[in-house]
Amino acid sequence: AAVNSPMPGAVVNLPLHVSSLSPTHRDLARRYVSNALADESRRSVRKANPHFSTLIASPSGAALLREAGFMPIADRYVVDTTADASLRRVLSALDATPTDGEADAPTLLSLPDELLLRALAG
View 1 (tube, rainbow, N blue to C red):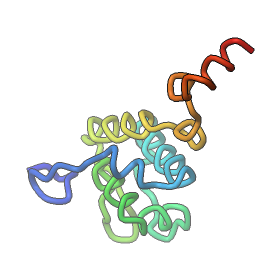
View 2 (cartoon, rainbow, N blue to C red):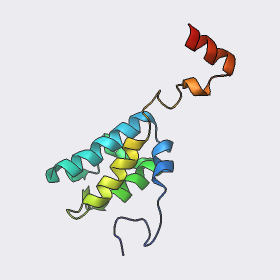
View 3 (cartoon, one colour):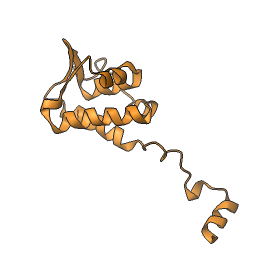
View 4 (tube, rainbow, N blue to C red):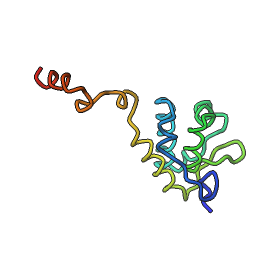
């Protein structure tokens, strides 16, 4: 059974959880996950850490961090050294989500025809 999933065999909808996070929480999650992947000494975070506590208090943040491999052990959240695939999967989902502003910016193709012609002619 996978220890990184909330329940054995459970499928976590990573894009849904990522898009549910605020841009600030998304960046924070990206930082914790990428740090844990890059440096094994960064795979342990104190439960008392205020930034991590805020992120883990969010249902989507908690789901993403659990899926990445962060598990509560004593007074810390720890990622096992065998969790690289889980960390990469969550990091890919975080990186695939547009940052704040990108998601709301209209593309030329989404403009009505009249505005598109004016934008291209101008």
